[in-house]
Amino acid sequence: MKSEISFMRSIVAAVTLITLILTPWVNSDSLIIPKIIILFFIGMFFLPQVLLNFRHYLSNMWLKIIFFLALLFLIQMIIAIVLSSAPFEQQLYGRTGRGLGFITFFSLIVILLATSLFTNINQIRLILFGAIFSTILTSIYAICQNFGLDIFEWNTRTNGIIGTLGNPNFQSSIAAFALVPSIFYLKSHKKRNLFISFLFGSILLVVIYFSQSTQGYISVMLAIFIYLILIIYYKSKSLFKVLSALFFSVFVCIILGMVNQGPLADFLYKYSVKSRAEMWRTAIASANDNPFFGVGLDSFVDWSRFYTSASDAEGVNEFIDSAHNYFLDLATFGGYPLAVIYFLIVILTLASFLTIFRKNEFNKEIASLFCMWTVLQAQSLISPINIVLITWSFLICGAVIGVASKGGIQGLRQEGFQFRKSDFSRPFSILLASFSLMITYPYFNVDRMQLDSLNTRNANLAIKSAKAFPESVVRYQRIGLELLNSGLLDQSLDVARSAVEFNPRAISGWALILANERAPLTEKIKAQTEILRLDPFNDEIRDLKLTAP
Image (cartoon, rainbow, N blue to C red):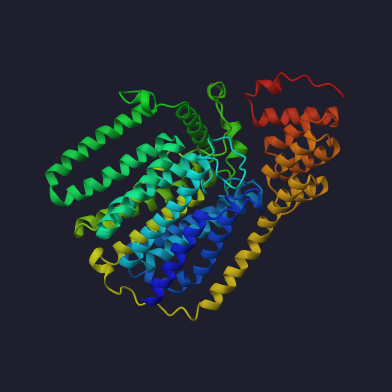
């Protein structure tokens, strides 16, 4: 029992650190790389524990289902990697700025399986307090950013409220995610916590206001309504039915408003909604053309212009590196099977919550957890996959499935499974965790080299970092463009050629060649042809008249 508590403390502490860590003084991609390193470390560390207690997954219906879904998810990812033409490094580590490669999803699966084994009532409280603690700290940092008190200079196109998640929408979502436990759970936990509850709730609401994100307000209303309706469910089934019907009506109005229809259109419709619709259509076209295995992990961006329709190319036509929907992103990464498996994990989690609600009395920990999970699922329908948010989602999924597997609330107060002692697996855990650092060190180091080269204006170091393992389309683009703008045309052309050799489906490398005066005419013509092949409706490139320099 003590080992279970220790395991969950370690996992929650790791996810809390993933939420908060940033390394802008060391890394260029400083909001992604350190999070991936910690995530992979904790995943590899707990892998032996999952394997050692394998028999428990076969002894319980809930655990058996989640185990086989997790196994299918991993198999589908491996098949997608093997069959895809996308660069191996890109699929292993993920694309710069996203980090949605194999090691990320592998680690999430391990966390899902580990938490489904180790969870009890005390660990539910650990999850709640970990979420509150990390969210309050990142929210305070976001408030400081709003008032210009940030000690780091971020290169961002947003309003600057990025916290430790990198985007105002993500920051508002995690604030809404922690609002219910911050207000209702802390308040009801101890009477003297009334002031803390008010303070924390105010901080989170202020961050949502500063973020200027509509989805933050919607998530807040959703979370509070879900919590209240759960209370009503246990007090009055008839009132619960009425409010459920009302909720469904409001939900429909919200959906209509987001597509510029219905009474809430003036409040909810934003230009970004039209852009998202274009992204969804492009992602669906990509998935329909690659239905079984996708185009490769975190590689949708390489195909997005190819699958953009003629009408969408004349619309918002925003740069697409994500479908802005978890299910569609996964469908493009690994085909519809990967998206369906993820959908089944979500459904299994929902079924676990409903089973607990039906068989047990009202429990503020489980109710708060359900509100947090609901906010994450709502956010997943309209946003890119964010490492912090999806990590919390997998953690909660595993926890509630673990609760259901032990018989609900009452079962949580019992010892549950008799786990094998961890002493045997500890050396393997340490060995695998050390191996994870070996795998992620090149990823960390090459990004550090890129930052050093840009800070020192060292062209040779920049070129070295561009070509070093693991190569990155984004790094090639940034360094090639810096060299081009600095007048180092030969060096920029060299980087551009390496970029198209690394990933010929990335438009940025061909664009660098096309823009370089030193490129031979034949090479420019080839670059123009390749760009039009990858981006068929790019009239600007089509109308470009090429002549010898």
